[in-house]
Image (tube, rainbow, N blue to C red; front, side):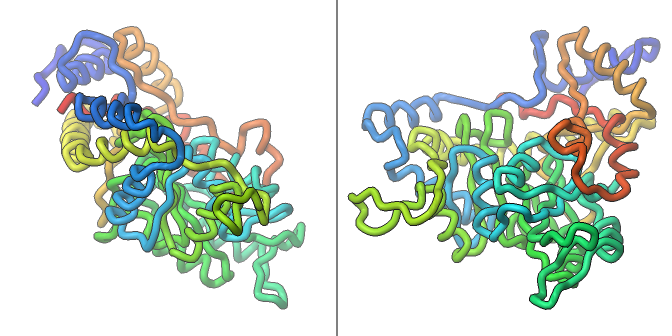
Length: 390
C-alpha cells in the first residue's frame, strides 16, 4: 500500500507521489505502457525465422480463436487495427451511404470515423454519469421525439427521412455500457446495434464478457491496450456476420483461391501473422494483467476517497478491466491545474478526448441534448493505469 504524503502539498503533488509509490520508479510514468517480455520476443523471433510474417500463417487464426473463446462469441476474425474492425462491422450489418448511426460524443475519434467511412453520419446521444457510455434514457427519449417506423419496418429520422441503420455504444475506459437497457430502447425501433469494445477486453457485465449482446463487437490491440499486437484489432460476434466480415477484410476475394476475382469493394484489413504471434504470447499474461490493474484501481479509489474526489468505479453488476482509471474533478480549472502539476513531476495524466460532436468534421451532425457529456468531459482526468512489470 502506498505511503501517506505531506498534507501541505498540492493535490497534484500528492497524486504524483502516490503514483510513484504504485509504480516504484523515479522515471517518467506514462498513461498505459505495454508489458513486453522475453516470451514475446521469442514468439515474434520464431515467426520472423519462419518467414510467415504476412497475413498467411497459423497464428492469425490461433489468436482470433483465443479472443473469440475468451469473449464467448460464436466466431472471431482479426484485423489490422481496431478502426478497421469497426468499419467492417458497420458494413457487415448493412450501414451504407446516406444512413445514420446512433452513437455517443465521448469516445476516440475512430468511432465516428468508421461511421463516416461508410458514407453515413453519426447521431450523438448523451452519456450516462454511471457508465460514461450511451444513456439508455436519453436514447429512448431522442428516438421517441425524433424518429418513426416506415412501412418497411425501418426506423427513420423524422426531419430528414434518413434511415437510422444501427447504434454504436462505446465501453468507455473499459467500463461496460448498460447494453440490456439500450437493447430494450432499440428493439422498439428495429435498430440493430454493435459494440465498440476497443478498450474493454476483460470487462464483464452481469457475468457475460462484453461483445455477447450486440450483433458484433470490435476490440483493439493497439500498443496502449490491455494486451497488444502492436497494431491490431479483432471482430467478434454472430457467425453469419463474421463470415461477411471475413470476406470484406480479405479484399472481397471470391472463387478460386489462386485467382484474383473480387465480387465487391473489399478492404485489405488482414492482421499480419507477425502481429498475431505477439498477440498469442501476450494473451498468456491477460489474467495477471487484469488482476494487477484491479489492484491499482482499488488503490486509487481509496486514495481519492480521502480527498473527496470522485473516482470512476465500475458500473453496478459489472467487472471492469479498468483500462484507464479516471477521476471527475470539481471544475475544468481544477482538472487543468492537476494536469500541469502532475506533468511537472513527469507523471503523465491526461484529459479525456474532445467531445466528438465538437470536432470540425462532426460539428453539424445531429445531436440530442448532451447535458451529461458537456458537464463531465471537461472535468474528466485519466490517471496512469498500466500494470506494473509482472
